[in-house]
Image 1 (cartoon, rainbow, N blue to C red):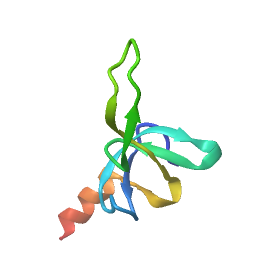
Image 2: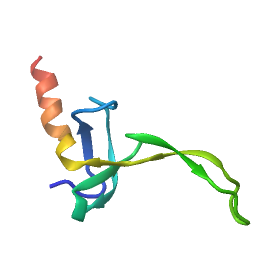
Image 3: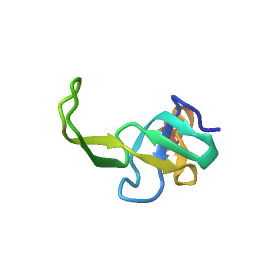
Length: 81
């Protein structure tokens, strides 16, 4: 089960074979935000509190495109090679 804080690997798309940590989950749409994965440019308008401009941020990716990374298993596999 994928939940917040889980280490995952991306299986398809422009960030294929990259891994990261789940930051946020949208259960109703079966999507998750992964730190440093699926970065998009967002145009932000200037307000009194914030300066505007073009900001890079993570976007949601479908759960079917993610695989859970288990550090214990990967260490055993590397040791056998």
